[in-house]
Image 1 (tube, rainbow, N blue to C red):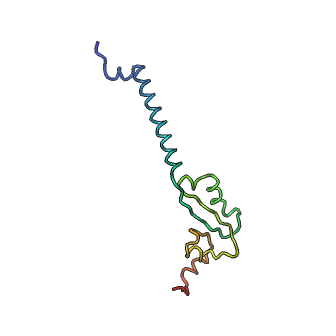
Image 2 (image 1 turned 135 degrees about the horizontal axis):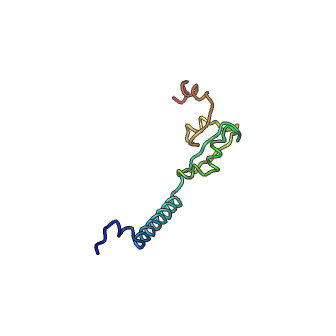
Image 3 (image 1 turned 90 degrees about the vertical axis):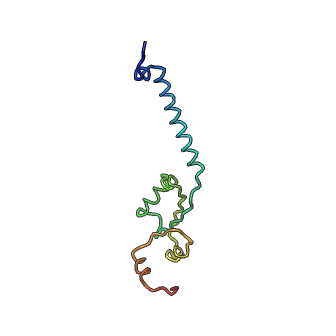
Amino acid sequence: MKVSLINYLLTPRVTLLYKSLSILFLALMLAFSSNVNAEQSLEKVSLQLSWKYQFEFAGFIMAKEKGFYRSVGLDVDLIEYNENILLVDDVLSQKINYGVHNTNICLLYTSPSPRD
């Protein structure tokens, strides 16, 4: 008796084999992806806030708490306002990576600097 390819592929034994291989493939992919994330070194990034922790920085704070930064390979350090820190100077001198500032940054950017 001649069995067609479609009938053969639909036999319970072959169907079970495909399901088993699919589950094995998915399990290996999950295991591999978790190892890649575990071994991935996080890039340290600092963000100087322009004031104390409050509602206006909720997006930054929640992203850190929820692990969104970690999921893209960043270890973010949120730095609360300190009156002794000159935010613009610290960013320009690369003491910190990023800073949140007000619109006066535009004036500082366009005005001649004594360093120029």
